Length: 483
Ligand code: GLU
Image 1: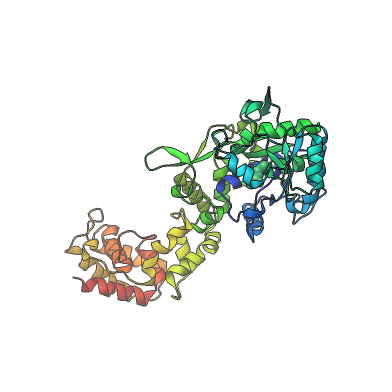
Image 2: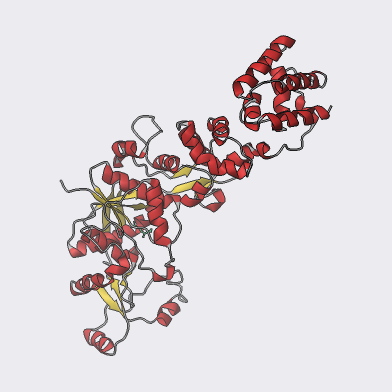
């Protein structure tokens, strides 16, 4: 059996859409699940779209996502160069071979002529009228001797149909008369994507061509090229569309109005690479059991092409957040602190508070790192708050007993010899017992005074411990002053 080889072939646009990342992930998994090689090839033949630094975005994303390529521009390999612009000169002989065997032709049409075609009814939406398809040889020779610029176009059969099988979408047939005589080689000598992808996939020994299904309709043309060269046709694996949920309940192609669509943007929003990868693995593929949690190496074992779906997948941000929360929970508090520290520092500024203790109260309730700063903003400074907050039915506190509890807690805490969570805990619980009230009746007013808000990560004990004696007592005094 031939070794499986897949390639991720991004065009360097400077932006990694989650759809592209899913393509990369599936190519990686198809290769790795079968002991194959995953190749990175940069498709930069569209010079007008070239963006400086965009290749670095690709390297960085693959590395952060853990998708290690076996061959590519940076790591080398036996099938290089892996950047299409560096392969520029190798495409022309292949295009000329197609001219020789009658599957392509030179087209000398000027830009102006092609523009003018758009004014006709038939070609208003683009397309080419095959004007140069059957030029007499003398005419071709004359134009060439005059140095007239030309492109090379694929000569599509005018009758019959082309059929191919896609591993996901099944058998697909296109009537040949619908296929345009597409450009293979541009006048500047650069190949078009439509030509280069076939040549490179063949020369690089790619066995599985995996890509978004926007390429499905072009695949008959690629198939005809493989046939024209007499090359083995790779396994085509087209992936389902990724949709987003619209406000009106419908779905449409995932775009910025649904939320972040770029890998970097999702990271900046507080999602972890592992959670993103786990989630997007399930956007179009499902395992044969109901398991949803997969590390990359588990995916490498579980993945199979026959469980890729052709139905569009819907990107659900709430579900991604759920995955993120699960990944966060599974960490140790120390690991979480490392990750959360920049966000904690953002909230507390230069206050010398114990970030590990703050991480501990945040850990199990954080589903997105960007929630952190808001959740702990009260540590930086006591917010303005209304004394109504002291009243809580469940804790049995009211306007009468709240100040009494707070004052009693204040007096007892002031006398604690050493300020630590155990001492604070025992003092407050002891006080509730002594007064014959629920623990909550003491804890509630203390926590409100310490944080100045109703919902906090951590309870009264943890918050007082983190704030320290001086700040805690000062905040309790402020609370008492409200009565
Ligand atoms: N360069 C193409 C893209 O970025 C690759 C398509 C393919 O995988 O063949 O969409």
